[in-house]
Amino acid sequence: MNPGAQHTDGTAEPAAQHTDGTAEPAAQPLRSDAERNRARIIAAARKVFGRDGLNASMASVAREAGVGIATIFRRFPSKEELVAAVFADRMDTYVAAVAAALEHPDPWDGFAGFIETVCAMQAADRGFADILTMTFPAAKALEARRAEAYNGFLALIARAQDSGHLREDFTSRDLVLLLMANAGVVNATGDAAPDAWRRLVALMIQSFQAPARGPLPDPPGEAALYQAMLRASQSITSPEPGKAADVVKHR
Amino acid sequence: MNPGAQHTDGTAEPAAQHTDGTAEPAAQPLRSDAERNRARIIAAARKVFGRDGLNASMASVAREAGVGIATIFRRFPSKEELVAAVFADRMDTYVAAVAAALEHPDPWDGFAGFIETVCAMQAADRGFADILTMTFPAAKALEARRAEAYNGFLALIARAQDSGHLREDFTSRDLVLLLMANAGVVNATGDAAPDAWRRLVALMIQSFQAPARGPLPDPPGEAALYQAMLRASQSITSPEPGKAADVVKHR
DNA sequence: AACGAATCGGAATTCCCTATCCGTTTCTCG
DNA sequence: CGAGAAACGGATAGGGAATTCCGATTCGTT
Image (cartoon, rainbow over all chains, first blue to last red; front, top):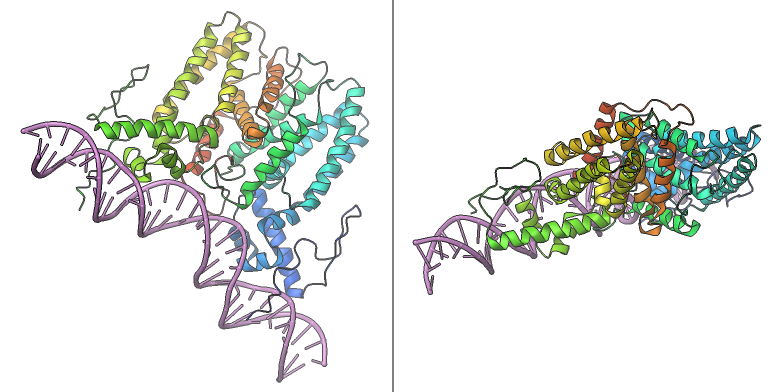
């Protein structure tokens, strides 16, 4: 029978190439055809997840890539691993966006521009919208990047608040809230109203502007939000028993 | 075999009892046990959908009601019909909320209070949150009520704008946007951060306040939003092929 | 060219969901 | 009480999704 040497690599195949030092084992190089298929799969998944969200089936990714389903699972042990591999570079872009925003000469414009950029990324890529509102225990690589972006965002907030343009009671958790809200709009409107999110985001940014027009209820705690995102991720892999399914009910 | 006299009634069984004049055929009264089960099913569905959202399975509703799955389908031809029957009264509450808001002595407080009330309803009932952001071609009863509420809301907007407290560029479509956004937050946070939505809503209301802090992108068209809501509803009944599934991915 | 390991990919397998079937049980009316 | 219609509910279609199996291919090295 089979020497059982399947499902070995996972995400990192070629030499690790993250901007940071998070290098991975970098197993032996793949056979040429395998490497080619791996690239095709990632490209197909990027397209399919971007269009349909993370609930797109592995079968549809395989179809798009022109490979068999088993080929995907041979390279990526689970859907979650594939998702992690696919969105690694989007997370890089995300991190880069924070850095760029910090460079912006105007603290407020940098802040507001960043928020618009991220929400635009959500609108352009449903999969990314899902990613930002959930957390898988597995994809540590994505989490690391998310944390990196989060820290940068904290600096962005501080700078904007110091300049007096961002309301004092704004907290980083408000970004999470906005991302969840925007994901809701993006998922609900979809192609029917591709720009609807812009209005929501514009409204939110105006309300972030100082001076505050009034007090706000307390923001949710970091821990609670993390838990919420973790919970959400459960539905990517399994169609939850009896309960509601899917991650975000796209279309 | 069976005289094939199954699946007959649907939603309206006992005499129609809507506050308006929307009476329905009102078929012959059900047998006592059937009537009892019908009530149990509605109650169970209200509980289950409220807790898990519309993606909750019919099986879980049957379990909660203590009846067989077939019993549910005998009374309600499809899941959609059950949903319509269950949320009929929530829609009544919704309509009543608009009316109450119009009664409020202060135009702005009435407006803001209504928005908070509706969002609170979404937070308290995941099923209702789903309902407000989708539309089934079938459930005409729900649609009629929604339209009724919508008209009332238009008056509420006009009144608030006339009073000078609501920004001039606010449109009824902004409510839809907010409902979608709030649904996103409610679904994403769930029990982990049950009050997170309050902060989002407070921020949004502040940005609705006049004077506008700046111009906004155009709102999506009515038609586009309707299409989006229609599309969303598809996923309640069928686990969409290849695409994303579920309506809102609760869990 | 030749051979073995690495890859393929289509066919299961397992699970969940909506909806239907059909033999059995329960009402209700005479 | 005794049909017989109405209602029950467990079992079963029919379909989708993730993941695994395994016989058939292909690559790379000798």
